[in-house]
Amino acid sequence: MAFQFTDANFNKEALEADKPVLVDFYADWCGPCKMMAPIIDELSKEYEGEIKIGKLNVDDNPNTASQYKVMTIPTMILYKDGKVVDTLVGVVSKNVLAEKLDAQK
Image (tube, rainbow, N blue to C red):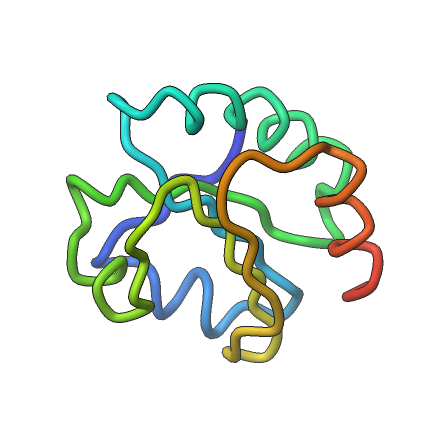
């Protein structure tokens, strides 16, 4: 299961993490987000221990979404050492995400 990021835990769990972090910015009502959900869950298992992968509900956590100017969902942002290193918007294949993750290991 993918980690659940919130406005309250984002700095500690994402920006201060000791490994790369992929955050899926989503909403429960979003069709394309639902398409990405199983891919995010699969990748979170496959990269466990190497890359922290999780989700942030933009409706429940508007401050973080606003801070990173997330206007379209799903948006996946990859962080390393507290900085944004890549951003993907919309539905993307598992292979595309895996390539981006592999580049950060």
